[in-house]
Image (cartoon, rainbow, N blue to C red; front, side, top):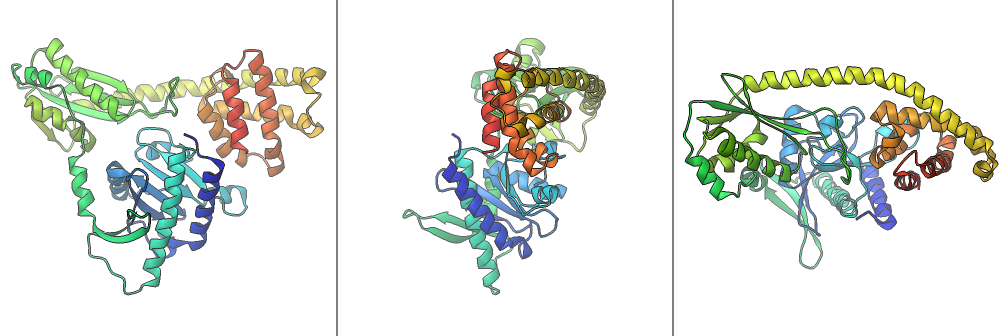
Amino acid sequence: MKATKLELKSLYEAADEFERLQPWEWISEYQLLVVEDPETHIMGFCCIIGNKSDERGLKVYLGIDGLRHYIEMLDFNQLTIEDKTLDSLLSRETCLSVGFNRVSELRNREVVAQFRDCLAGFVPISLTGGWQCRFLTQALKQVGELAELVKETPSFTLEDDQVLMRLQDFEGNWKTLKISLSVFLEQMKETGVRYENELAAYRISKLPSTNMVFEIARFLMPRPIEEKGDSRAYYPMITAILEKETKQLVFAEMSSPSLESQETILSRFANTLIKDLEFKPQCLVTDCEAVLRQFKDFSDKTKIPLMKVPELEAATDFVCDLMKIEEQFDASMEVDIEENIDLVLLTSREICQNILECDALSRHLPEGVKQQFTNIVELFHVVMLGHFQELPDHWSVQNVERACKEVLPGLLTEEELKIVPDILTHYLDVVGEAELIPNYIHLQKCVTESYS
């Protein structure tokens, strides 16, 4: 459910108060703070950004998976909020974030908060959900309280493995606790994908064993895709299983990075063993912790040993070959984009000319809107094709929103931005009625909400 205007107003107020507090002046990215969501009791592992970087803000990692992502980002030294060039990096995280730097530097004006909703494996989006909005509002307030507690109490100390936590009691009052981080780290060990088909597991355990070693590789493709009916685009997850010596591909699957997809992959690999191969390998090996978590229960129940190795051999070659194909496709796409831009500009220019010359289609447009109509429509087409590789008949709501909120503010003046909604909604109405853009009503709504 979408956030209400009142919820968004509360979020912006909490962010403004947090920015004025500037807790990054005395708290580093390594000092984890925990806030329990009073609605769902999900733990938010909060990291204040800014002490050791130019960016400033807050990231709230959601649940035990979020804690794992936080630790991985610490290991990679890649804690960041800026996402213009790091969508693939942010696709590794499950968190809510607010950043204060990027918009102000881009537009040379006062600090403006920008909110992001990141889900591992999916393209980050602007934060619009009601629950996400309410939880981030509470996190900003409670982390601010904890930051002030640390600042105003010089003698305040924590044990090496302790973190500060804020949670509500049964009466709705917020309390501060000291809690050992090991409590949450132990829960990390228990997370994984359950393999529920006991009959199939038994049948696999009775298959004849060979001396073959199966390597399992799992990775995200760099180009996101968006399927009809899905709320957000995702990076396709490739799961490939190869025989180590012959480098023969045994199993391959492309899916979304959701938990349900991981469960499906286990079922399909089980079917491959039972129906196609009719034997089981000596062991399964991988160099990826995520694969270990995914296949551990499957390994235990099928009696096929699962081990982690420093490096895969056959699977690494497979991944490199696949990425080369992707790079070649990208190179061909760049040529296509240049050719398409010329065609799209010519077509959009002709449509705009027809709109402006037709009294019935332009009589209600103010003179200032008419003067900028063609320029802004052409610019929008270039942005959608150049940034998102989308032609008009394939414009997605998500990327139209990103174009309006993230790209156009860096290309247009404040005065020009004020007339963007009138121009784009009118243009979409005309081309939509002409059946040139199928989902124009949703796109019109998206444009209007982006600038409301």
